[in-house]
Length: 208
Ligand SMILES: Nc1ncnc2c1ncn2[C@@H]1O[C@H](COP(=O)(O)OP(=O)(O)OP(=O)(O)O)[C@@H](O)[C@H]1O
Image (cartoon, rainbow, N blue to C red; front, side):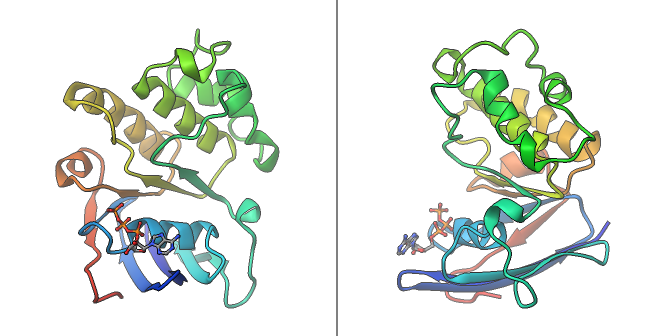
């Protein structure tokens, strides 16, 4: 497959303009703290007020703000935030079902629960989940919206080494079984070696 992404924008005084192409389904985006990795993901996802993006998957134009500025909720882009952001008052099942209205019919909430091994957790609330379980719910929620591209900001943050190793196979399932292209941001290249076929480096002061 071929993934081509470009995004530019600004947050306050910080401006970025970055692009990459990859033939791998899972791409790691690394770079020093503050270089703009999260800003780039936000630009792709449509979360920046001042920003634009262009995404192509296998020659298919998924998004081009130059042609059509599409709001975040209409982009078929899943985003898993660093701090997970589950709704605390909703159960696991309700958290996952929340994103389904935007999706198609290929994967149901039950299938997302199954793929992330969350059967038996459906009626729990986020306060009763471990950090790794909460990540899996966030992944299932993103998946249930039927994204064409998944953005993961620091997916292993806050997990110790053994929990990182236990979470990695779930990301591989999304990559391989759900056939979902993904961009992962991390500080730690070792995390990304587990998942990513290619590492793209974003530098400070030398965007694009
Ligand atoms: N809301 C904001 N207003 C102004 N500047 C911001 C805002 N958010 C981020 N920045 C600045 O934009 C720059 C890029 O931040 P960003 O979070 O994208 O970097 P990053 O590479 O993801 O960093 P890290 O690896 O530390 O998470 C930083 O200099 C940051 O201070």
